[in-house]
Length: 274
Image 1 (cartoon, rainbow, N blue to C red):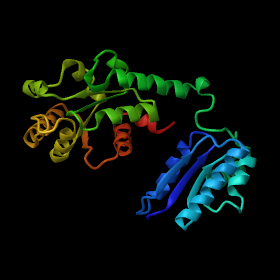
Image 2 (cartoon, rainbow, N blue to C red):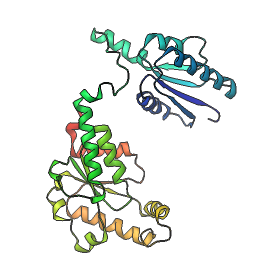
Image 3 (cartoon, one colour):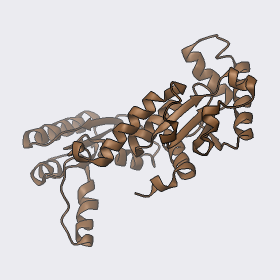
Image 4 (cartoon, rainbow, N blue to C red):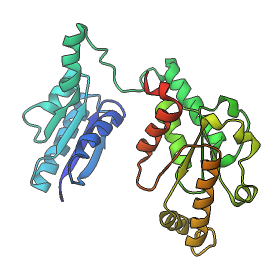
């Protein structure tokens, strides 16, 4: 869909609007231009966004889609007024107001997901999880693995780091990751520090051709990136995880969100209920 824009307008960070909007847009074979406009919390800012939306309508010849999460009624009224020429999808009106009726109470009308973050135990848990994952990235440390929720295993560049950080940031999961390297394959076993926590381990594998492509972007024409070495490492890693009874999945065609959800389902199903 060329020359089509989608706006995500919020009085907070805009992450909720964008996440929800992208979930809906994923149902369509289209790649519109994304425009996030966060912290629209005054009337002047709202008028400025409407002017931008109208200008895009003129330049593109079709109205943009506008996903909004605005809790201030006066600000929201400006963006949803007839003079706004975008197709406005008001998430709060669609979801929050019917729930107010169903629950028999008014919503908090809180601006943004991260309001009063310092007072939130959930937020503080996520910060601790992020710090833990950074300290235990790529096998940097085997200390405090008793407090890890998940330990990811796999060859270098198969997606362990982004997955552990996503688990920490989105779910407050303390996730460590350990790269399986040639020395491990020669010994035919995992380090003792990891073996002691097998119940927390989950493995990632990857198609060797895809792994070679990724590694060549980092170290072109190296043995590390050669297709022969990638085939060997992937084969040995899968064999090692099989010997130790570690479940794994391929990251080749999976999103981080899908990988993380599978890990939670298999290792920490309690974190899918909160």
